[in-house]
Amino acid sequence: MAILKTITEEVSEIVNQVEEKELSQVAERIDRSGRVFIAGNGRSGLAGKMFAMRLMHLGYNAYVVGETITPGITENDLLLVISGSGNNKTLTHYATKATEVNADIALISTRTTSSVGEYAKQTLVIPAETKNDQGERRTIQPLGSPFDQAAHLVLDSIIVHLMQSFMSQEQRQGLHGKHANLE
Image (tube, rainbow, N blue to C red; front, side, top):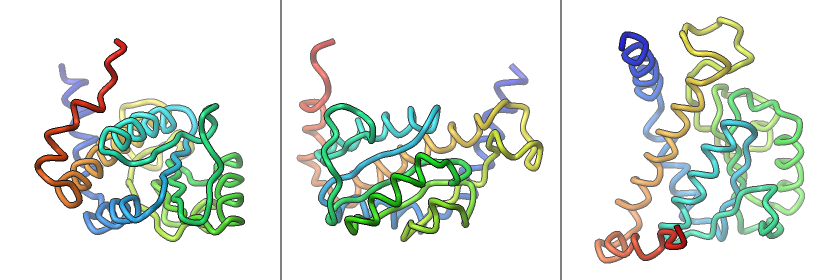
């Protein structure tokens, strides 16, 4: 169990460095937006899909970029990009397209500056190891796992912030009615 303890300590150290103000600002952007479009690749994209599902449970119009039922983004919408490096070409392309229609863009990344960050009005920094860091940060885990794990917890924290700040007790009690029932 020493491995599990080390991993949880690594992730705890990372999430404790996330700025609460940045988390609150992302939550407020989500609440103000018409619709939320989530984009990420690989494991970051999977964390984004979990986040989109929770946003739907809360009553937000949330979409995952690249899915067949995702509509076009417009100026009242938010593109939330999840990318450890913030330099992925596909995600940068999405940010470019969102900018062309005057959509709002927020980035969750390990860096304050990046190619996607040039388009983002806000970056929420998760100071974690990515697959591109090559030992710059210390971890026992492979290929950016700390970022993906921390991103999942940060995104769940945003969900709780949205629930506590923007939902009534009655709305929170009705969440089970939006959970999938074709299981």
